[in-house]
Length: 325
Image (cartoon, rainbow, N blue to C red; front, side, top):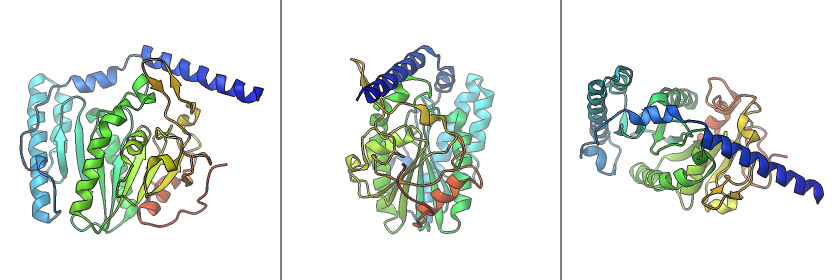
């Protein structure tokens, strides 16, 4: 019992030190992204639920999303932020497909890659901490590589539908931001399932995005929930998620997230910690091989993680699936 007690104390000490550092370190990147002004999205087709995904219906939504981006571009240019304006100009390209866009407070965006109207399988990417408009290119790159790996008959949706926490912050170790985000993700998936009832839908949740997926999971009609680079889903086991979906977990050998202690500590005003390790046997997820990559390498071209995630989305079993020792 003594070694276990010492291990528990050590984990709590490490977690307390991490929290102290998170509170002390400035989050200038997140503040900079949120500081760029943007207009509120106009009432348009983007505010109407997408009940069907015909070519015409999607064209209307994409046009509304493009108009919102161009409005944000004009405000950013007027503010003197030429870098943000140029980035938004690229996002407004007629070839891009945004179901919704809001440039305020760091940015919200839902972008479709592929032809959603005929997709037999749809992967919804839920990004993690520090994802905002200034770093949107990283999310886009991963979505494009996944689409290429999935092949014909597939669509990928990048769902940046919430205010992500900074990686080095107290919010990244609590479920508060995930609680805020979960209703939006749950509503989006319901809308997607109603509009495309025959498609196989999978949630792909990176880093803090796995906490968002954990909060949204109960009763959600998806085939798979895949978490990678995750410090926890906010619960102690797959059973506690309240989902009938297959739950998968993977972690690269070079991912620093493995060093985050898996404990929950009450600090009076907040409970810190994200629950059990998703790749542990006790958690109960189906563990897939993710290679030796780091925290941002899961959707890297040719990586074992990308190959196996694509197999899961297609409804295929990755080789060597099991529970972590």
